Image 1: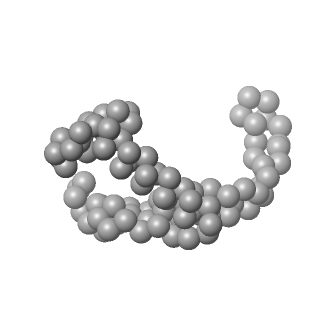
Image 2: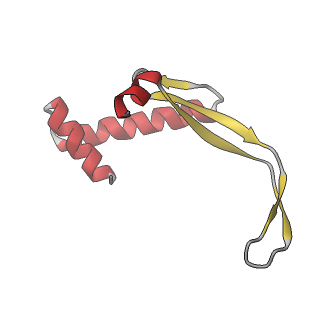
Image 3: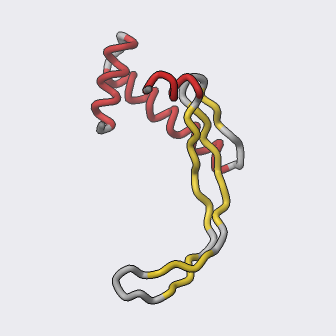
Length: 90
């Protein structure tokens, strides 16, 4: 689903215009990004939790050449679905 599709769905459900729905979605994404960058968890009731995790450095194999390569440590965003979301999709 593209961002424009999400904005349209938000506008339809909330009975607001698409511009307002777009600003609301952009604000949510900006808020989540800012909080995660600062090391905070973001819990959205009924949806799930976004959190930053550190990934350790590791060795991996290049599937094309078979050569071993070093993959550096990095940070990654993790999302854990809420219990209600999990139950809703079953």
